[in-house]
Length: 225
Image (cartoon, rainbow, N blue to C red):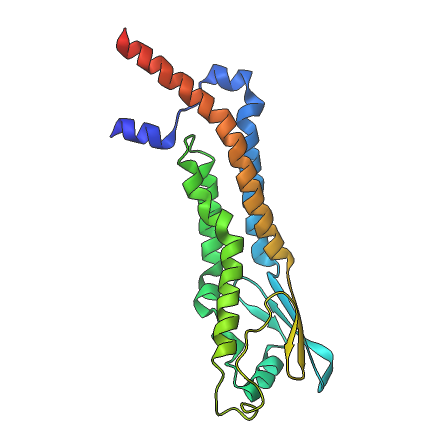
């Protein structure tokens, strides 16, 4: 069991080695720390924006999605969507919004834990943070597709509007409605976290793999002697 835990956690850096190569070992820790900060700050910033233009709203309607709530002209957009048979926005991704902050905190702690694991298994702890931006897009597309393809056939304009997939990013629209959607600063911070985490593990491997190989080689020599 002790050997298993040692292989899992990785080698501890000897004090002399740390003094001689402080920058080598501090670099991955610093990069992963910066990645965690970006991810945590993203909670407070928008992840997605959408502007909707309609004849009765010449100045446009705006919707902003954070990881845990929606802001903007939600009620007005729900009113327009009602006519084409689309469900209220609040019913989309209810679980994701309820758990969003906690999921980000969990990813923050996992990346922090990865900084203290000096073996290849550290990457597993950071996989959620690395994949998070992709999963956000996939989840957003899922709900947009689900809502757009399951319109209420009894809606006032059901005969005029066929089921469709709303545009997740860029320009789109249906009928007289025009939309423009883009990612917010929170999303780009999450992307920055994923990118920095990958870079951090490049330096993590450069720092700890040679150390692990040397210690493993020294242990093998001792066993033979």
